[in-house]
Length: 350
Image (cartoon, rainbow, N blue to C red; front, side, top):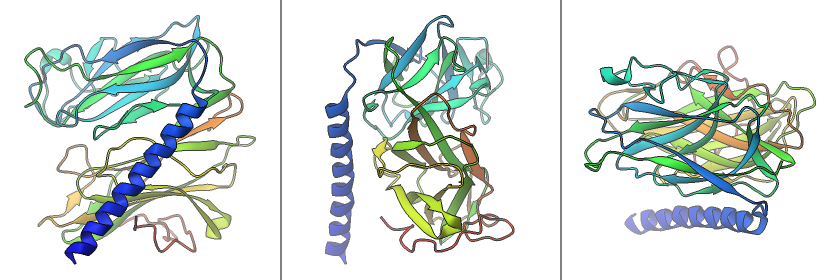
């Protein structure tokens, strides 16, 4: 049994390495040749007092000049940062350059009462966890921000899992953003799924399902990367393109959320009106008590991020897809579910 376990671990690590090398080769072979510049958005040597706190810093963009973001280079350590997210906003959640954006468990008064990262026009354009590496978009693909675009602000959110390892000078976790002023022909965006609630009983394997049907006319998306995210109980996260109410299932991506949570390449497919994005997180709870969906490391999360591009600037009208999670919602549920058929038997297996 021990040898079998070692072989399985090696197999999973090899799959992860192959996926990383595949994306790296794709990026290196198609790296945008446009003249590039960069700026960084990072914490201002912050010294948070409490773990599980979330803070945001803002970066205002030039409303008269569009730029095309083509690369993200994270600078953070998983010992301190549970995750980092970069939101694109029409307006930020606060007019302060640094603000509390989710610290519901502990209030540090100098940073105000908690609010959302964005007041309006919220969309995630980048996410990081578990010491993931940089992300380079394929040639000709970019996130279009500033100018006449909806995104006029970038907001970096850092979730502090621990304050023990922060240097005396303070924390400077952040992301270097590489961009070009040369307009790229393909526009990038992110669609992510999550369970807004859900319970994982003690001693169980529980599936947390989400599904949403694409309803936009004349929008064809080209997924090119995916990322998975859970907390400690997650074992497998999988995402599928489903057609004809479940007659055809095509794997978009499947990953181990305990490995570096970077963006990995998807299978080369397209999605359009009538298709369903179906995602599943397989959770294994070996604790003595049930675990609920929530923001802290003692709770759980179930997220699947799908990064895609379109030929023009017309993106999906929806930016996220959510469900109520188990025991209420499931893929096969008729009244409180997606009523999907022919569910792959290996959706919970790497």
